Length: 182
Image (cartoon, rainbow, N blue to C red; front, side, top):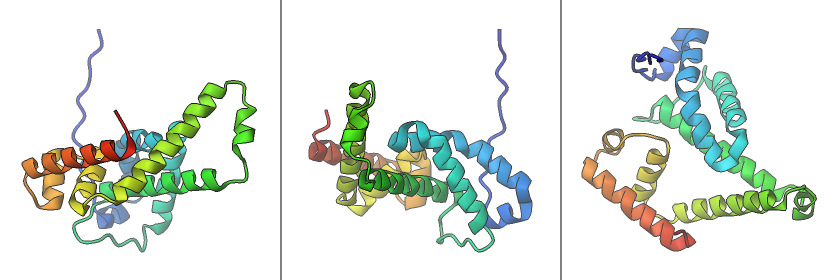
C-alpha cells in the first residue's frame, strides 16, 4: 500500500521574487510548472513538449533580469503563452521546412505519418479559427487550455465564473463548427 504525500500548494512567485530567490526559486518554479507546461506543449508538438518547456525556461532565465510583465499578468500565464508561441513557431518551421511529405512517406509506418500531418493541420486550423473568436471567448479558452480553473480565469478576466463557463462553451462550439470537429 502506497501513501501519497500531500504537497503544499505552490505559490507562483512574482518576477521580482524570482529574481531575488535565485536558482532555488527558478528550480522550484520549473519543478512546479513543468509537468503541466509539458502536457500543454505536447498538445501541439507531441513528444517534444519537454524540450519545448526546457527552451522556454532557458529563455526565461536569459530574459529574467529585464523581464517586465503586463499589469495583471503573472509568470504562470507568461509561461503558458510562451510554450504556445514556441510550439506555433516550431510547427511553422516544420511546415515551411524543405523536408516535404515525400520524406515523411519514406518512414516505415505511413499511418503514423498521416496522423502526425493530420494533427499539425488540425492544430493549425484550430489556431487560425481561434484568432477569429471574440476576444473574451479566445482569452477564456486559452486560459482554460493553460489549466487555469474557472475561478482563476474569472479573477484574471474580471468576470463571474458563470460568464467564464459561457465564454468557454460558446468558444468551443464555434471552433467545433468551424473546423468540422465531432
